[in-house]
Length: 92
Picture 1 (tube, one colour):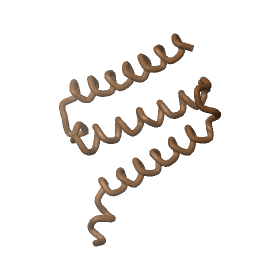
Picture 2: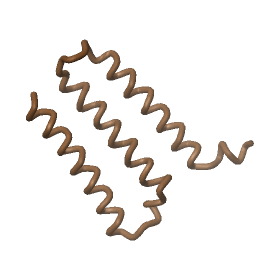
Picture 3: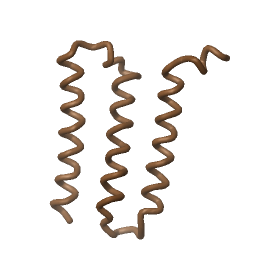
């Protein structure tokens, strides 16, 4: 049992759970439905990007991948985040 607690993936899983709960609470308390709330949207999308990074980095073992793959993954995440924010603010 103690070996599970010492496993780094258990720590990452706990962080992912905490970030999921925090993003849910942030979005829930962010205001009425069908109203744009830019700061809440940016915060929730940032939390989603952090979660995606942790899942890809730790559970998909990209941390042990070649440098070009790690750089591509980070570039893809940043590009996706920027695209989502761009679409959100363009529609506002």
